[in-house]
Length: 234
Image 1 (cartoon, rainbow, N blue to C red):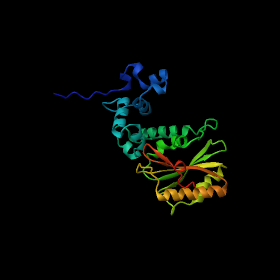
Image 2 (cartoon, rainbow, N blue to C red):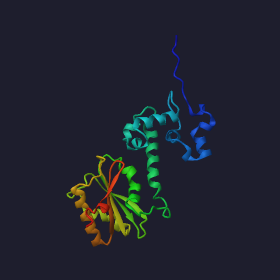
Image 3 (tube, helix red, strand yellow):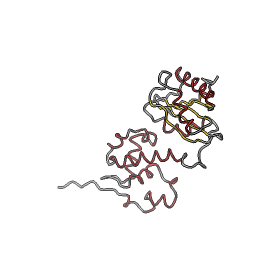
Image 4 (tube, helix red, strand yellow):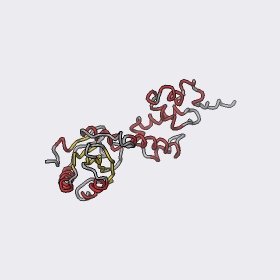
C-alpha cells in the first residue's frame, strides 16, 4: 500500500484575508508579523510548507530577526527552500531598511545625543563578526551627511591612521563627526586602546577644525559613549 504523500501547503490555500500580500494591501505593512513580511520576500514556500511557515522556520532557526540579520549569507543559503536568490532578497531588504534613513536630504536624521547616533548604527554593527570603525559625518545643524566606513579589523593605536578618519569629513565638508566602532564580543567596555584612539582623534579634530562630538563603542544591545564617560575628551 502506498504511503500518503506529504501535502503541499501554498499561500493560495489560505483564505484571501489571511494572505500576506492581501493583508499588506488592506492593512499596511505594520499589521503583518515578521514571518508574513519574510513570506512576501520569498513569494513561494517548499514542499510541506507555505512561505509564511518557511518564514517562521527561519525566525526560529536563527533566533528572531536579529539572528537572521547576523546569519552569514552562506548559512542562510543552505536553509531548506532558500538558496542564493531568496537569501539575497532577505539580505537586500535588511540593507534597504538600513539605508532608508539617509535617502532624503530633508529626512536625514539629526544627532542630538549619543542615543540618536547609536540608534542609527547599533542594529547593524552589533551583528558584525569583526571590528569595524565608522564615522558619522554631520553638517552645521548636526544632520547626518554620510556614514563612512574607515577600518575593518582591530581598532588600536598601532593600526589606526588618524588622517584616514578625517579624509571623508574633509571630502564632504563636514563640520563635525562621531566615531563609532563595535566590539564583536558584545561587551562595549572601552579598552586602553579605545581611549588612546579617542584622544588622538579629538586632538586632530581641533587642528583640522572638525568637531569630534563623541566616540561610541557598540556591543550587543548596548553601547558606551566615550564623551559621556570623559574618556579621551579631557
